[in-house]
Image (cartoon, rainbow, N blue to C red; front, side, top):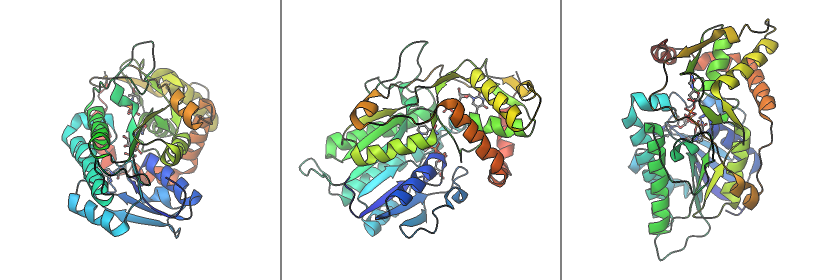
Length: 358
Ligand code: NAD
Ligand code: TYD
C-alpha cells in the first residue's frame, strides 16, 4: 500500500486491539478515509474511540461481517483500497461454551470479506492486483501448544486445540486459499497475547486487575503453569501499521514480545504492582489468588519467533514487560468509569458461572 489517498476498512475497530489500530491509523494518516465496521458485540465499545470519533477522516459503521449482502454493498459504496480485518470472537473460554458462534463470525465473516474484496478488486488468477491489500489479523494460537522448548515460526504446522484457535486457523487457511486461487492480494500476521489499555476484563490481565482492585478472588486456572508470550498492545498496533504498508503480499509475519511468563509468576508480579499503586501492605493482593478448575484443553505454552518481522521490516517491541504492566495498571486505576461500564450487567453473571472453585 502506498501512502496516497485511500479508503481503508478496519473491521472490529471498537474492540481491544482494533481500537488501538483505528486511533493510530486515523491520527497518523489524515489523507486516508478510515471506515471502522463493528457489530458492537459485548466486546465492542465506542468509548474506546472518543479520541478520534470526530476526526474528518473517520467513519463508524455498525454492522455484521456475517451478512454477505450488506458487506458487498459496503465495499461497493466505499470502494475500499485496503482492509485490516480484526473483527472476531476472541475469547477461548467463550469458544468452549459456544463454538458455533466462533465458526459463524470468524470463518464465515472472514470469507464474506474475502469475497467482497475479490469482487471489488476483480481478483482472479489472470489479474495481478498490486495496489490493494487485504490484511488478516490472526493469533499464535493456531500453531497449537509448545512443550518446554522451541518457538513458533511462520513455518510451524497449524495444530489448533480450542474452538477459538480452530476457527482462526480456518480463517487463515481461507485467506491463503484466496491468495493461491484468485491472487487476492492478502497478507496475514499471527500475534501472541496482547495486554494494555481498553482490554476487556474477561481476559487474564484486566480481569486480575479489576478483581484485585475490588479485593475479589483472582482465578488462576489449574496450577498456573501455562506460559504465554505477552506483547504490549501498542507494539502490536505498530506492527500492524508496518505490515499493512510494507508487508509482502502472500506472506505471513509472526509478532511476539519475546516475553514469556508462567501465569502464576505474572499474577504475582501484578499483585506486587497493585499493592504498591493502591498503598496496600505487601502480600494483600497475592492473598486473593485462587486456584480454580483448569480450562478444558488448556494449551501449555505459546512462544513466538518474530525474527522475520524484525529482520525484514525492522519492527521491534518498544517496552519492557514490567514497564508495560505498570502503565496498564495505571490506566485501569485512572479509567474507573470505563471499567465500571464494561463490568456491569450480563458480563458479571456470565463470569460468576465460570468460577468453579477446585
Ligand atoms: P475483541 O474481542 O476485543 O474485539 C473484537 C471486535 O470485533 C469487537 O469490537 C466486536 O464488536 C467485533 N465483532 C465481533 N463480531 C463481529 C461481527 N460479526 N461483525 C463485526 N464486528 C464484530 O478482540 P481483540 O482482542 O481486540 O482481537 C482482535 C483480533 O486480533 C482478533 O481477530 C483476534 O483473533 C486477534 N488477536 C488477538 C490477540 C489478543 O491477545 N487479544 C492476540 C492475537 C490476535
Ligand atoms: P486469556 O487472557 O484468556 O488468553 P488466552 O487464553 O487467549 O491465552 O488467558 C491467558 C492465560 O491465563 C491462559 O493460560 C488462561 C489463563 N487464565 C487464568 O488462569 N485465569 C483466568 O481467569 C483467565 C481469564 C485466564
